[in-house]
Length: 228
Image (cartoon, rainbow, N blue to C red; front, top):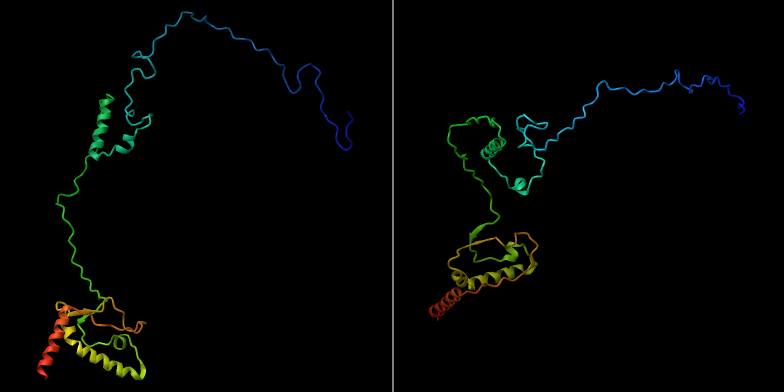
């Protein structure tokens, strides 16, 4: 094969003594070693498994960690049902060590007594909180115009006339209003609109009760009898 132009010629010279290329010494054939002693051809007696004193663990003490290292998967009772107390856990560990036949028992350190005093509950000083109520309790109002006095309505020039008519209505209904709800002598603003709220102009008729009607009829009859 022609040498490409521009490349140096190779200096490799093949050997001519018959040895493979790349070896510095000839390969010698491997001879099998002759055993020094003829093996004993006496048949070996097979020992059945389970014979005491035979095996890798023959003559050794039982494994003390066999009760703690388990290869079988735990059941549901062991996973979720074992809710032992600390004393029950210690006793169970002692019994497992006894089941293995180990002369050593599990010894747990003694628990020190934390205190000798009897348990006493904590006594806190009573806490007083002053909270302002969101309502006001006052005596019943027998003369009141809610639209103008409470919610700030102003009807302009006719407002004095309307206020006078409300006053005369309250005077005429005073016996009825006084005798109504005799056991409730106080009133409160709970459930009512606050002053300044945008409340429409409404009419508030009196709440008629049997006690109020009887008192109103008695006062009217007394006036007719007293003033002929």
